Length: 380
Image (tube, rainbow, N blue to C red; front, side, top):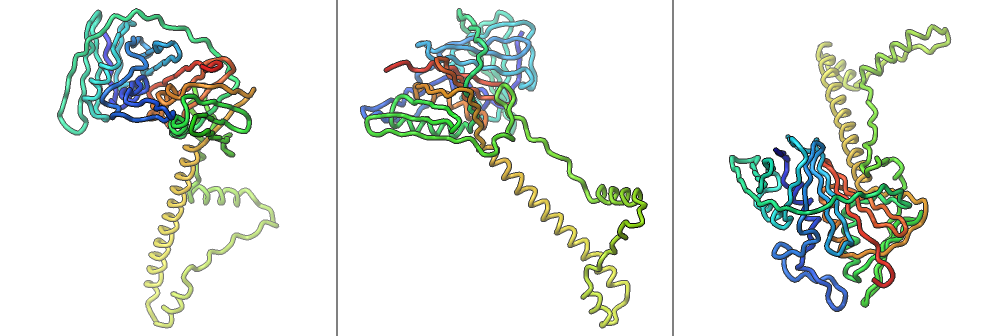
C-alpha cells in the first residue's frame, strides 16, 4: 500500500507545469512567439505518460520527450511529506495531462493525500481545505507503462552557474521573441545568452556577484545559509567587564569611569523650583527607561533593515565556476518550459560541458527537479 500527504497542492501543480508546453503559443513568420489562446485551453505535452516510482525514500519520476531531446527527473523526498507510507516499491503509471486536470480542482494551499492499494488500477486523491470543512475526493485511472529507468552517469561539468530563477525565465522569454535558439557562453567574465533572428540579434550578459563567495552551495545546488553569530546582550557585556576588572590587579590600570548624569539641566531646573528630591529621581528613572526603549527600537529597526538588504542581495546573487569556457546552442522552446519550475525556488543551477546535455537543476524544500537538454549540432 502507498499513502502520502503533502501540505500544499501547489507543489504538485508547479512540478507538473514544468512537464507541459502550452500549444497556445507558436512562432510566427517573423520568429516572434505569438499567444493564440490562454494556455489553459489546450496543451502540447512535453511528456504525456510517466511512471511515479514509489519506494521507502520517496517518489521518483523520470521521463523523456518523444523526440529524445529532453529528459526530466523529479524526486520528492520522504521527509518533504507530512506523512509517508510505502510498504514496498511500486510504480504508479499516470497520464500527466489527466493528473494536471484533477489537480486543478484543488486550491494551492489544500492538503493533498495520494493513496493507492497494492495492484490497484486507480490512484485516489483527496483535497482538504485548510480554511473550511471542504473535502474533495477523486479516483484517477492508472496505466501500465512499460518504461525503463535510465541510468544517468555522474558528470564533472566544466561550468556551473548559480543564478536567480526569475532572471533565467525572463531572459529565455525575451530572447524567444528574436529566434528559436539561444547560444549560452560561459567564461570567467560571466554567462552570456545570445539569440539571432530575422528582425534583430540580441544578447544578455550576467556577471558574477562581487560577494558571490559568501553564498556557498552544496553539491546539489542548494546554498548553505550564512552563519549567524550570537549577539551579546547588555548583561553579558557587564559581566565580562566585571570579570575583566577583577582579573587585572595592575597598579597602572585606569580607574573605572564614573557614570555621567543624563539630565543635568532638568535637575537644575528642579532645584530652582524647590521641588522635592524624590520627583527628579522618578523623572530620571522614567526618562532613562524611555531613552533606553527608544534606543532599543532603533537598534531593532537597523537589524531588520540590514536583514532585508542581506535577503535581497542573496536573492539576486550569481555565482559562476569555470574550469573551461563553454559555448553551446539550445532550443528556447524547451528552456522556456524548464523555467516554469522556477516557481518552486529562488535560484536555478545550470551545468554545462562541451558535447554534453545541459543540466538545469531546481532544488526546493520537498525535493528537486532536473532537466537535461541535448545541445544543437550544426544547423539543427
